[in-house]
Image (cartoon, rainbow, N blue to C red; front, side, top):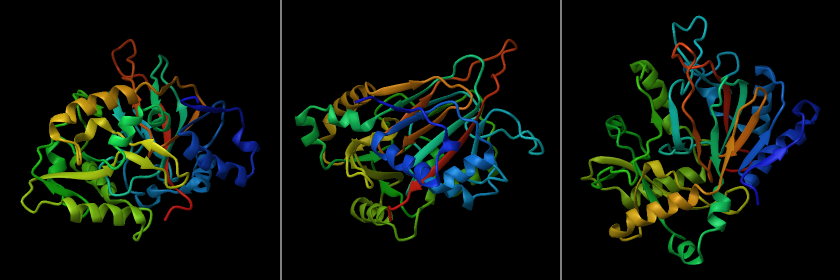
Length: 331
C-alpha cells in the first residue's frame, strides 16, 4: 500500500458526481495527488462546495480568506492589493509536523491545497499516512493503545488564556514530549486583530449537535479539574474513521503532553516510539503549478519545508489556495 494515491485525471472533464466521489476516495487513501490542473478561484471554490461543508464561509472578514471566494484560504507570502501589507496564512518560515485544528472542538475532516505559484527552488511538503502506520504497528502496541486518549496542549501562554467550552482544565503542566514545534518563524507579524480572527476559528463545528461535539464535551466532564490551571483536550489515539470505519493513528505528536491510561513513567518511551514509527510512512511532494493535493485530516499529518530565499535574502514568492471541509454524511 502506497503512502499516497496518484490520479491521472482532469477535473474539468469530470461530472459533479465524479468530483464528489474524490472526497470519499481521500477518506480511504489518506493522501491523493492530482497534477496538471488549471483551475480558477471560481472553479476551485465550486469544487470545494461539492466535496463537503466549508467553514470559511462563516469567516469572510478574516484576513487570509479570499473575499470573493470564502471557501478558499490564501496560503501565500505575497502581499494582497488593498490589504495594507497583509500576507496570507503561514506566510513565513517552516511549518513543522501538524494537522489542521489539533486543539479545536471539531476540526475539518479533509484539507486540500492547490498550487497557484510554487517557489523557484523546491519547498516540499511531506504527508504521513496514519492508516498504514497503524496497520504496521506491532500487535502488542495496537492492543496497548486501543482505548488510549492522548492529552493535547500547547506551551504557548496565549493558549492557556483561552476560555472556550471544549477546553479541559488540568494540573498537568503543558510539557510537550518532543522538541518539535509546529510553526517556526523568525519574526511574527500577526497583529492583535489577526490573532482575534484566528481565535474565532477555535470553536468551529460542522453542526451544533454533532456526535463529535458530544464526545468532546463528555471527555471534558470526565477529565476536567476545577483546580486545574492549564488548558488541554483529550482525543483518541487509535482513530476509527467516521466515514470508512478504518482504523488509523491520530498522533499530532508536537502537541502531545501525555496518555490518559498509560503509566506516566512510560509516556516518553511510547511517544518516541510512535513518532519514529509514524514518520516512516510519509510521502514527500515537490510542488509544480497546477498540483492539487487532498489529505485526510483525521488520520495524517503534514509538514512544510522552510521557504527558500532569493538572491537578496527575501523569501521567494509562493501562492497556494487551501480549502478545508467536513465530509458529507457525518453528523
